Length: 252
Image: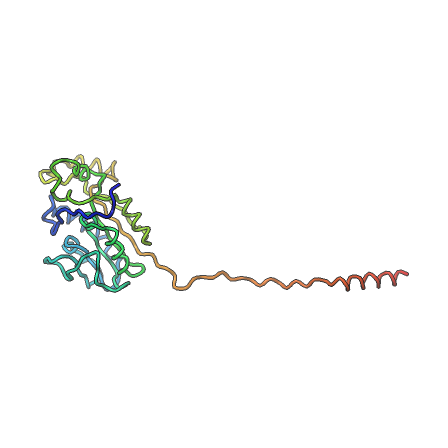
């Protein structure tokens, strides 16, 4: 198992165009996220990373949407996504699209997102699945310094463990795009294989999407109601002796 913390970073994608079939990848992720956007309510949404900023989330009822990333055409706040310049419990939803793979400390990114989210806020995470055709292509010699294989692919199960430790509830876990996403790979050529894997090998989707919700802690602890026991009034020994003496005098 690869360690989560790493100080060796490869090239980071600044746009979907840098990925093979980037437009296809972005449109499919948008289609998956669109089903969850109407369920997210509030005032502020964060998009972490340039890739998240390019996603079209206009179907969301949250109107104030800010992209936090390096300088780019969609960036609203220039900052490191693992050191967010926002107050605690100030954000209603957070989108991290392919962020964890290309940063040195994905744990810290999730902790910062957890810190800024309000109780009950949503987090949407997308990433590359290592147990897929795209993940297997990472083992080939040509993929050493090429996107998307320059990042560290984490399994969805491992990311869910991180979220559970932070106190999130996993609402949804989806896999999609059954292709290696290689640049010379024509997606239409492998349509029968994609249909087969989608039907019989669903966990092998090249892209996963996790939807998590921050658990709400009760404001006041609920204490059990202790019922008062009835007072026990023991009969005194002297009274017993006096009663037996009265019985003897009456019988005589």
